[in-house]
Length: 104
Image (cartoon, rainbow, N blue to C red; front, top):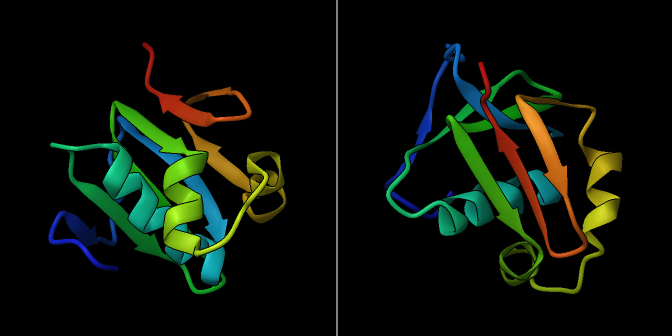
C-alpha cells in the first residue's frame, strides 16, 4: 500500500462500501487504485487472510485506468468479478468504472 490514506482496520463500519477481494496482486492494485480514485477519502482495508475488504465510507470508485496503472498492465474490468467474491453496498458497473455506494 503506497498511500498515507490507507488504513488497516479490524472493524467494518455500517456505511462502508467497496469490494471484497481475494488476497493477491489484483487486490493490492485495487487498494492503491481505490486510493487514487477517491481523493479526500480514507481507504480502509480489513485483512481476513484469504480475502480483504477494501472500503471507503458512503461512496467508492474504481476506474479501469487507475487499476491498470497500479497493476502495470491492461486489465478488463469485468474480470474483476472473478477476484471479487463479494462487495458491500450497492454497485454500478461499466467497462470503465465500478462504483459502490451506500443508500438507506
